[in-house]
Length: 378
Image 1 (cartoon, rainbow, N blue to C red):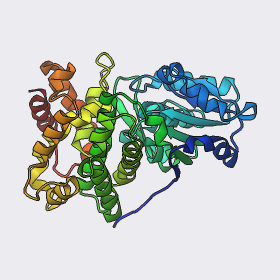
Image 2: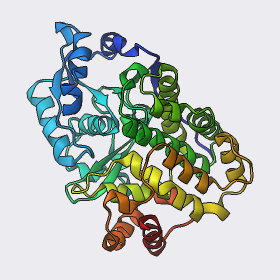
Image 3: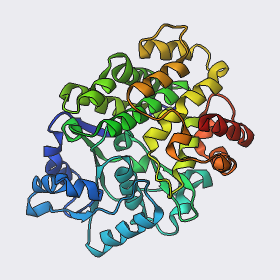
Image 4: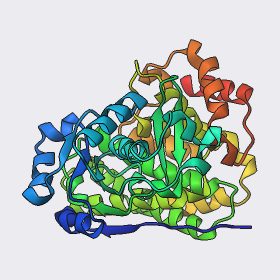
């Protein structure tokens, strides 16, 4: 039996962020906590966004979001929310800020340790309504603005998933203009995050044809139509930025049918706070390895994937992605990112427990993951 769900309202176009005041009013938010990062503060983007709201809805700013959000940062932000008498949360930034904001909206409305609400421990059923949440992405990658999940490094060191329909932002405000001028490497990494979401969603064995159609459309925008390469080559290309933000949003819509082993491995690597690895870059680097691994377990879907990428039906999608990664300036393996071979056993143990493993088209044991990490390191 299939369950088809698309939950949120999205306001999408260049200049959409100018509507934030109206969106907050719609949801009855008068004193929002704005979860963001220091980089956006220093760029002046937070001040510019806050200036659209006036004094009536001036936000309280929390800019302590780490590259990979942590339970400690969530607890710090939640304390600010309570101390300042906030009544809603605005996420402003990349996937890290949006995931942190979701966890804050949960933390200020639920008792107990955040770990209790993680999906792998059966926490989804424990999550009820959370604080009103609005999301404004400033990168075109995670699609967290329309998804039901958040990934947080817990106090025990594991990078785990919070998942519930209650964590879907009430409104997503997608303004591609906010991504203009992003550096090429970040554009490439976040863009491949979106492509990986679309590809893993397409390959997931769960039954959801509408999600697969959305995934294919996202892949077409990013790769076949060339918008990701164009955005990397010219950060001021407004049309390419529009299409890449749409592809990122579509990626998260599509992965309502599940992700796969790429994300399991990426979450394991991202839990290492000393390396501070970028999630999108990890996904890009790991994707070819998993495409090789899944090859005989996807039916006709590689032909469909090749069609979406604009390749011959008989092409090797793993090799296509390797070549594409190189063309947009991303690393060729985990070793280039600083991951050491001796880390493989621990990474494999983490990945085998990740919930994304259960929707990979080919079953993947801890031993399989160790071999896959060894391949990705070479």
